[in-house]
Length: 471
Ligand code: BES
Ligand code: MN
Ligand code: MN
Image 1: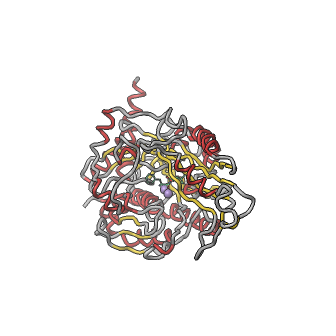
Image 2: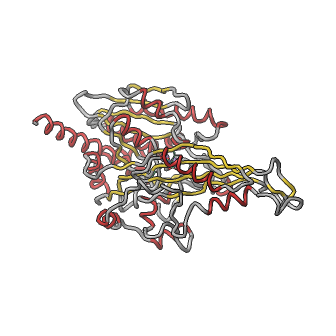
Image 3: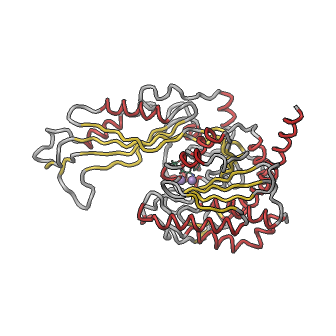
């Protein structure tokens, strides 16, 4: 047995009980009633980093939730890895669909996880994936095998768009200086086919409102004679896509980077079963932009979705009313070439132009983020690839993901560092959904794989430096 496996085997139960402690904290950043829980989660992580052997550990205040920082420096001659993760989680609603309480972690077996999976909000996104890095560090320090310097930066506002992180990164550039950023906050294809995320979509999140009459009206006395904001809003939303399911906002696609036939054929080699995909979601047909496969629609093509829509009466029974206003939250996923600030402007202009007389449209901008890509010939990618080859005994596949981590492109802009996305989750982990879970196989495999990334990266980095100094 390799020493990593052996260490994991000997400390398995403790690792899980520590993870459970972390998962029991309802650190929902979107819900201010959980303020204290979010703060306590930061404290807990500070203690975990200390216990793992980090030397300088601190809670760094921001205008919002704090960043937990820790470091272990061994030599200025050696490279520095910056590990990023987030300790906040998504809200749990709808509560009734959870088979066990979201903040009372339990282990259950599933078809995809015969060895068991931990069920809890945040199990996969991102507490489980973040915690495996802390345990990997513990292993390296216990076994005197940490090959380079390491820094941890764990934030508490990722799920609300990291509103204070730009400020934090800009003000702590020296502290955060690194040679590579390492993140486990994405997924892989399957437990037998690891993949490394080489692309993330950007995000542009908007909220729209339509105001009609100055008060809710009796739908008998006024029905048919005034613009109903919900009727109108749904018509306007319907106009945001055409028959080919392309987004109709003028200029929306103008900067979208089209992938070459060769690049698309390369991506199409990644294993994907439409049958399994449909079955997992219980749908009889997939749906999306004409001319692209399902994998392409979620990875290299932009999309627009209504996330929520409200107005009027939705309570028990019925109430005959024409609502005075209607609202919707709309997100757009962006791909390389697209800039979220520009898309915000294009969206706003077009949406307002769709509103007929009789209603007033207003648009509010929420958060946004840029898309991101890492080239697969980067030494960070190569180091990750070698690490997976050793622990999974399979060569990982580069894969573009449909999700967004806005801090990643920001790190590149502010710190000139690339991020390597070694996600150990699966799409079926139900992140942001009821019954979120994270496989025990995935958790332990992550702990086993991460130290190998450290050693391969250190070696490749030193080779590169040696070549550079020869020149
Ligand atoms: N970890 C996810 C992003 C993710 C998941 C990327 C799986 C790729 C694969 C992250 O926590 C997240 O949920 N991001 C948000 C954006 C944020 C600004 C709220 C998202 O993608 O919706
Ligand atoms: Mn996440
Ligand atoms: Mn998330």
